[in-house]
Length: 121
Image (spheres, helix red, strand yellow):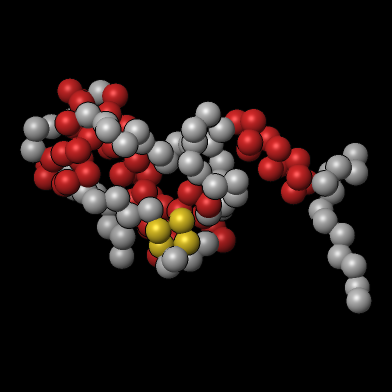
């Protein structure tokens, strides 16, 4: 049986373990993003504000594309399927709007239908 070695840095350190350690250190306490993801930029508090609830109602969250959570996709757009790229752009638009709704609701229009999302298809 062949033994496959894990990728290593120039100094011989295990890259997979090093990246996992850095992600754990970078995650805020209580973050629910799995170990494979980076940071906690895709999580919002369960209570949230009225503006965040309006955002959710107007634009339902779509964090998954073809069974894959978008927070776990390495974003190298020139190597990805165009549909996945569109889903990632839409996800960024949605997260930006949700962040505005939570932290700066006055910057959003009263009529959220004025904000057209980017196409997913």
